[in-house]
Length: 155
Image (cartoon, rainbow, N blue to C red; front, side, top):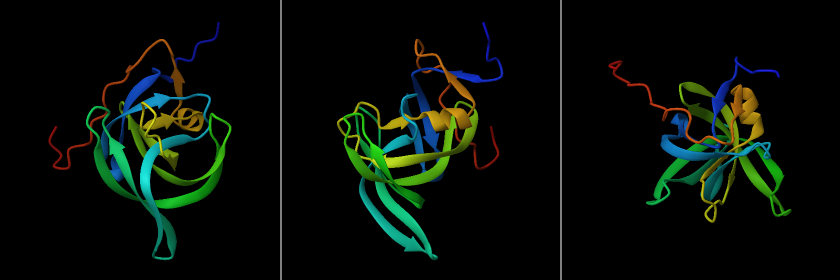
């Protein structure tokens, strides 16, 4: 039997932060069947800034009490995604930094309405490969909630 001791183990659900977007304490569902990660967003508005394409959107934090958070990110692409029900739709793609446990790396997210879904974020296989993660589906919340660095330098 081969082991993967150089990879970090995560569970089927984990707490994440998106520090560049100002999002802290978001529950993510790990979805190895999805290639690209997805973030629940509404009020999506593309715009231009300094000759680059950007997108402004509302993200949602929390499951019991929904908190809206207005975000802006550089637009990476417009992708056609086939959803789990077989329907194709065009989605905006952004790249932003993701924190999971004590790791942080850039991840691409499609922006989509996930209001009927239990989790506001899906973490897909590309993010798992880039983060060098393996999933134990029998576990949940293996990693500690990520903590943002203290801007004052105090611990």
